[in-house]
Amino acid sequence: MSIYRRVLRYYRPFLGQTIFGLCLALIGIALNLLKPWPFKIIVDDFLRTGPAIRPDWRIWILLLCLALVGIQLLWGIINWVTNYLFVKIGLQTLLKVRTDLYSYLQSLSLKYHDARRSSDSSFRVAYDSQSIQTIYNKGLTSIFGSIITLIGTFVIMLRLDWQLTLVSLAIVPFVVGAIYLFAHRIRRESTSIQEQESAVLTQAQEGLSSIRMVHAFGREEFEVRQFQEQARQSLQANLRLTLTNVNSALVISTLMVVGTAAMYYVGTLHVLAGTLTLGSLLVFSAYLLMLYQPLEALTYTAWAMEGATAGAKRCFEVLDRQDDVVDSPGAIAISSAQGAIAFHAVSFGYAADRCVLRNIDLHIEPNQIVGLAGGTGAGKSTLLSLVPRFYDVTTGSVTLDGRDVREVTKRSLRAQIAIVLQDTLLFSTTVRENIAYGRPDATEEEIIEAARRAQADEFIRQMPHAYGSPVGERGGHLSVGQRQRIGIARAFLKNAPILLLDEPTSALDPATESAIMETIKELMRGRTTLIATHRLATIHNLDQIIVLKDGRIVEQGCGPELVARSGVYANLYSSGHFPS
Image (cartoon, rainbow, N blue to C red; front, top):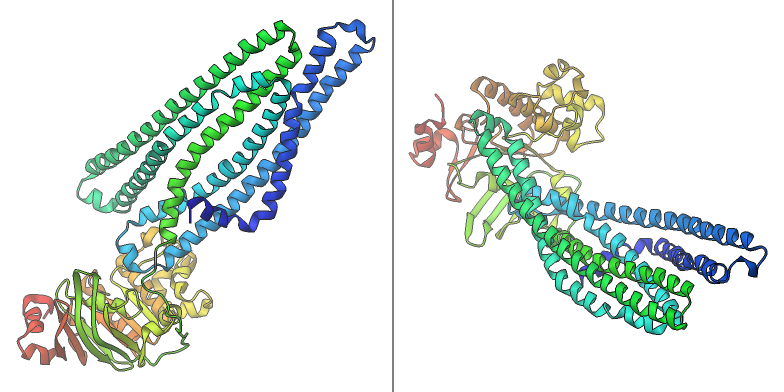
């Protein structure tokens, strides 16, 4: 299906309004075609013959001038209504496209987002989506109005003087050739601009989001140079497109002047020969302008459409992307879970040639707390990600209470799982909204109780607006320990039967870690828990520790038992991962 057809499908709900607008546009075009006639009558009936022919000539001239004002006023009102209507339809459709894009990006698996820059996705939602409105407002409506005006003007000009009409239209094949010549170049250069502007946004976002790191290492000048280079490439892409537009405009305008000059020459000969009145020549000149204006508008519309097509294509690239983590046709929604988790011969890779987990067999009983240990890149975090189906296994299966998680809807599956990450992600809203993110319908009492259990209530109440205090971008107004407690309060409030902890204390100092672990122990009680960590003190006394190396389970047991085996865990223990 072509890009234009797909765009028009978005406008299907507004078909009735569009037809109404086009009918108004037809009336407006008819009024526009009437504008030259009052002056033609004045020239032919009064200026050529003089006022003696009609004693009431002053009244007639006044009426003709008022008629011109009336036509213009009525045309202006209709034009205002149609423009407002078409712009409103375009903006409503833009809202729909942006919502669809954002919604679909939210639903796509992490594998898609891992392979792409988040700023590029943001650029497509915020800027590329505007091409949908451009195609409608500068495409469909503009093309319709231009074509009707061309037809109406052509018919009137043909009736006035067919020879002048043919002379005037002699440039049309050259104009069409110029449109074709420049159109492909404009689409290519417009695509380049979209990509370069997306890269500029990425550079700015990365530099500003990492401002603390930039200042810490004194890399301000380096970051500015990086941004300047990226912005320079965008500038060059814009200059190339501008040069193409200027060249094309010069060619088109020159062709139209040639056509106008030819018409003046032949028209003058016809007036002198007596085959055409002066008023008719003036009217013909006005209609020639009406002919060339829509023709020029169609030229620029074609080029605008090429540029808009580049943006629309980038939007549909997202919407055409197949989600690789989808609910199966017979997936069921579960309302509660016991918490028994099992991995059956699970292997997984982020790419076909990049296997991260190999033949994992693991059974976790309800309410059991299991620690995952291993060096960097062993596969701990990846193993956790398979439980809520952030990714689907390559081979094997993951089950919850004996049911393959692929047979459970993602929404209901994730409702049974609470997650606490190493770097707690907070949104630029209030403390209250961040704690209630997993349960937006929670009462104020429930939010406060969750904060108390996470030992966060005390510092929250010391903030300027307590639970209504903003946390800043990514929680920048809070310390690392405070952000972690907010994340733990969020997990307490969700009260899910399964808890996943991914390096929950690795970014904390020993004193804060000890306090946080006391809170986490309270959180783990009565829940099936998987905790992945480098800090073996966190998991050493658990009944079950799974040791991973190169994506395989190499050891399994309790801490003292694993140390006695003198294996991988013992090496981690002796290398300092377990503080004495």
